[in-house]
Length: 261
Image (cartoon, rainbow, N blue to C red; front, side, top):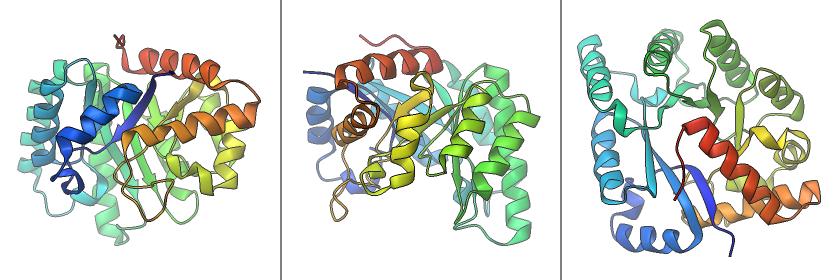
């Protein structure tokens, strides 16, 4: 059986509090690796603990989700950045970080979110780590602004997590050498399916964003459901799932600098 990869999920979230151990055991049966993302300081501690328990299978990125910027003082953010610095050898990336126009709409709060976004991009460059980008808006303005910011900041390694934009925007991202990660909600999106068909396979990655974005809308998402993304990429490109698997594994190892066992 093809062993697959989920490059972005949140197994520390409360949705797994009752059966987290079983969820991870089940995921091991289907996957080669999982990346879990720390979204704020307390979550990041849990993320590192979980990765330590499952070394070589669970990998971690640490960041500050834009919805968690509000209310944090400069000192608190400095302390969190110091925590990430102290653990830089235990992580494979910085993220998720970025812009969220869905939840953060006040101009002053957005300005603050942009400033912190750029700060964390600086951390990624300092540590030579890739960036996992959270860019959310009703249209494509967050993706477009995020692309401009990382280009202006000369960030060379980045993945646009949960990409929902048009194929034309995907082309612009890929022209810059950045990666696009397609989520399990691809089953409901004509636009994502077009991206799966047209974007360079060498710059595609796969994710669940579990517990969110399940292909079965009313159910909690699980890492192994990332298989639907592999199947959709294969269907759109008229190639085998095994061929997709080989490419995604190569992309994963190249971006995050790890070798899967």
